[in-house]
Length: 433
Image: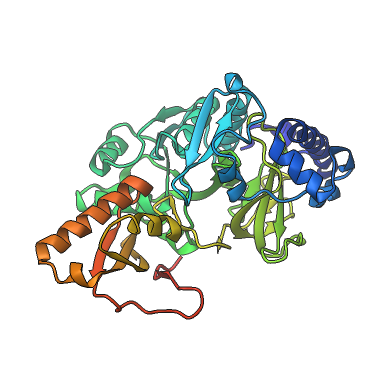
């Protein structure tokens, strides 16, 4: 089912003409309203008038996450705060979040794109959508919520957590679709089974799942456990939130990028060279309709490839393969972005810990786990057990407060963790993603 046939089925030539027009407008606007972009373009020797074709996009410099941090909180906004109706934020490696702003029109655009995503999943105004993405500064909850309302569907604003209550609502309210992370949905299926609930008897028929990497194997597990169709959705806070790309129920082979609002490229993460269709590399997005917080050639660090073949659903947008990994050291634990450097900054603020640590990522059942092994000083290690337990609890609490993720903490003797001559291998990932 196609929500906006006029744009989602545009012939390629018409789509690219629209992209060029919108690209020229946004490049001119950021150059004249954002000091960062003016300096960046000038340094690269390119001006807005130089963008005469889509191929000229590659002449523009990249924007990276550090640029957002350097201009924290509102330095990249192109409109005054009086025009901003909503602010969202995601975690950053230094404790300062990545901040994004939206005008009224931005919110309307976002709602439309999420409505398109739901339509691609086969949903209509007759559906009831159980929204278990987190509400708040995280973009997932409200993004999905507004999209469901735009579609005309009924939405249950459940948010995350409260597993038993989630299962009760799924039974009693009879939602036909659910939005959450894939690992949490599998956890719900397992928890329901333990509670004696026949999870296959629910009215659910579709899961719109994202915010973390997941595999075909996990898709099969989810679909078997709940007797539903599980579909992938892609987005990131900096670009908009969820709804940048969506898998369709007809094709299920890659996610349709909504190219009338975003220009997507794939680059070699080492050289920055633009790669042809079919080549695996780092995704780069340019927003061409956002008013408050447009981004030019934003490096996502997500690894994928683009497929130009038209899908049998009739959408003419290019498709992106499911994200297979990252070109940096970021971990995604239960939908939360975590960098080793974030954890390090918390650990180094706690007296008695040595600057040697290891992060062990694993999966217990369907849920990701993160264990922090950290060396303590000789003095602390000789303390009584009760003091060590108290220190473990302090670390666990600080990590939870700072990063929003629950971890296990294991204090180890001094000089027991492996030392590296080159770059330390901080992360051991035991998951099979």
